[in-house]
Amino acid sequence: MVALSYPLGKYIAKVYKGKKVWSDFMKPVENLIFRLSGINPEEEMNWKQFLRALLVVNAFWFVWGIILLVVQGYLPLNPDGNIGQTAHQAFNTCISFMVNCNEQHYSGETNLTYFTQLFVIMLFQFIIAATGMAAMAGIMKALGEKTTQTIGNFWKYLVLSCTRILLPLSLVVGFILITQGIPMGFDGKMEITTLEGNSQTISQGPAAAVVPIKQLGTNGGGYYGVNSSHPLENPTYLSNMTECCSILIIPMAMVFAFGFYVERKKLGYSIYGVMLVAFLIGVCINVSQEMGGNPRIDAMGIAQDGGAMEGKEIRLGAGATGLWSVVTTVTSNAL
Image (cartoon, rainbow, N blue to C red; front, top):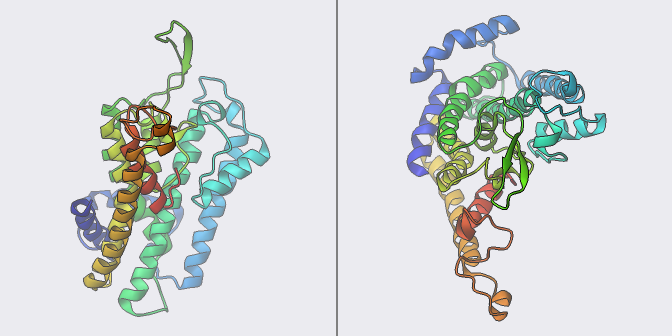
């Protein structure tokens, strides 16, 4: 992760400073967004203007989300005929995603349509991650230039966070997940026959589009109701490790970006080191305990060669599950 987060952090610092980077080909797209929105990206903001812009954009998408969730039964991309959420459930869903809590009082397979998965849940996961990154960019600018008068332009940082950082990384992660068998399409539920000969309905949809930003933005709230314990959201060891790395990569890179931006690399290294040591301690304790099994079950004469497998996914095992729990906890992903 150090080998990945260090160059990414350096790249992020260059993006926010406006230096030349490989993703400059996105400038025409960004300029179009600014022009259509009536935004001057070079206009400096003080902290009050910055905060006002942050609150306004989140309030707008909050209302957007509630409306779409309530009327989703009448919208396109709904091959399974899912009905709209109640007003209070839509309110809870939007609030939880707006504050990056991502508390799911619904199961994605039955309570959301493909349209709202993409244009509410996935959209929120981009916006909220980019909002946090934009706020951090404003802090870095203030500290780097040793001023409290202006802290950059929130709208510029928000757009750059999406177009230059979150979107490219999401495409890479999404491609990997598709190769591992995560669904990416708009077909309805699929009827299959199980090994026992029973009929079972399997939900499909654009899962591979939603999962990458869910992980990269340290969002909870997966495509399926049981999130990444679902075999179609996290089918293999490679997908599991990809999703684990995706949760960690941007938070770790932002620490390096801070050091590069304010030109105090040793400070960035120090913060990174403290975080890394705390993370590794958690991993060592949790994984070793999970792999050691439950002594009470041992006393019953039940073999625990695979570790404490109660509540675990057999395809991943106790060790990988223990690692996942630490990764999601240290990033406040809580997934």
